[in-house]
Length: 196
Image 1 (cartoon, rainbow, N blue to C red):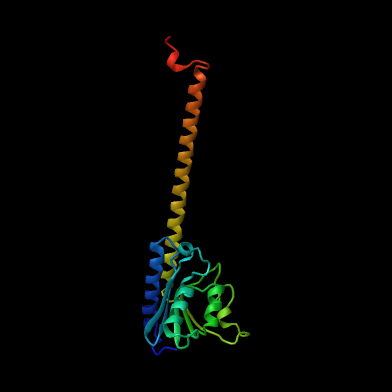
Image 2 (tube, rainbow, N blue to C red):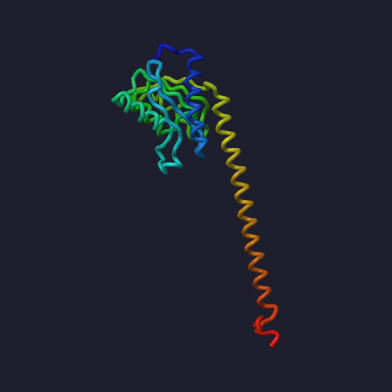
């Protein structure tokens, strides 16, 4: 594990993960970010890209793990710490265990898919041959706020789109009704020949 293990250090690295999350938010993705740190240096970064890439595995942690492994030329991420803004899901928890990451620091729990203690704890499952230490709640309010602001904004945009669709549908229906009414007001008469 890292020599820098203070709360301030964890907050510093978590702020970098938050920067990654903001990159996801800027392109309309759910704002989740991750960084992997080894010997005081970021060796992997990632942010959520599921919608952009149409890839269910394009979670922040997965991208950061791939980048870190490529950077050090090994799949074992020993002496590394993974910082992520949201508690890892089952897939990411599995990758973390398989990658032998010794420490995970996350910001806010995930009540729908959290597998670092909320729904289950795959990272510290005693039947696995590797377990990961956990630190939770680092900059929790900031990490949670990123997500709640994103989803609040998404709900507003969805309501606006729905209202716009309804207005356009009403306009189309009104135009169709007017057209229908105009063609039935003088049945059988050609409007260009009416004066002849």
